[in-house]
Amino acid sequence: MSGKLYVVGTPIGNLEDFSPRAVRILSEVDFIAAEDTRVTLKLLNHFNIKKEMLSYYEHNKSEKGNLIIDRILSGENCAVVSDAGMPAISDPGEDLVRLAHENEIPVESVPGPSAVITALAISGMKSGRFCFEGFLSVNKPSRKKHLESLKNECRTMIFYEAPHKLLNTLCDFLNVFGNRNITVVRELTKIHETVFRTTLKDALDYYSENTPKGEFVLIIEGKEETDATVYTEQDAVKLAKCLMDKGLSASEAAKEASKTTGIKKGNIYKLMLQ
Image (tube, rainbow, N blue to C red; front, side):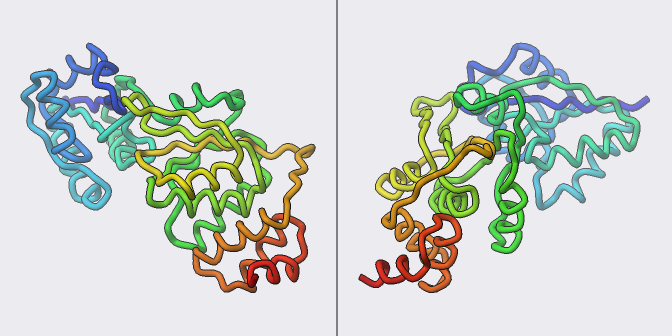
């Protein structure tokens, strides 16, 4: 008789959010599949849990996934955890859960915090319909294709982003979506948790002056047909310069900024040279 796979949510910052049931399950299973064993060890030590851990992450999931499944099929129980939040959401745990189902292994949820839902709940954005888009690709063609596919998305959109990529991402958002409303949520459940409701233009201005720190969840409003943003020439130049920082030539940047703002390419280009 096979064992069971437990999908266990872990705290996204505050350890007080770890449930008594999660503590019990991690104490009772035979072993734990962890995205980063060093991170999980800190959690286990805090709750005085002594348990075998097996490293399971993006670059070894093919090899380790089959090993984990074989152990469960032999009768052992396993808990899969990510560094923070629910496993299998923008996380290699997704593949392990799929493998378990393919092998008719019971999968049981032990719910915990999720950055997606937590950020949306405190964002002040419409939450009746939303889509989670995860991290954008660093590959420029894939990134552009992804964002262009969302240009007419009417649902609230949620993205994850790292601090060193935030400015480029805000620039791309402004270029593709126009000046929509955005809520920038950072460091969820931690001491420096912040919720910043603003527009894409103002967010870009703010983080150009203030170095982004911490992990970010970005919640952007969906498209509304009645939206009609008015851009100034200064806005257009700022966007063009942002695009140049991403590698576009001055002419290409002026052209892209013109598409977004409606201001003539020649005017933007001339102001950029001044």
